[in-house]
Amino acid sequence: MSSVIDRVIPRQRKMSTRVGGLLIIVGETMFLFSILNFLMITRLQYYSSGDSFIRAMFPHYLLFLLGLSAVAFIGMWFAYVYIFPSKQRFSQEQAIKDDRSPTYNKILEIQEELREMRATVDSLSEKVNMITENENK
Image: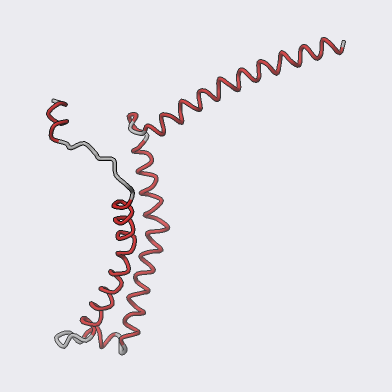
């Protein structure tokens, strides 16, 4: 079964970082285009001749933008305070289940090695203390 999967899934190529870097830069700057789209759509909605409800609630376009910005900032605050920590904790808990995270497994190995090293150092420290006490007598 695994040989069939190996044939279907292509092998990854070793490449330079240019393609990946370009994609990351484009992805990180797309929110700027979203802001521009948002502004254009709000103008269309505000000045729509078929719907005067928004103009009745907000007598000026800048007040309309200010209201939308307030709603957006409240949403960002909510996401920052509640959603991000919850998502982060959930993903971290999922990562350590059933040996899914090689990094976590390596940390556990290092912790065990540290325990062993501490025990060795404590043992050697006790022996050194005993030898020093015997020499001082």
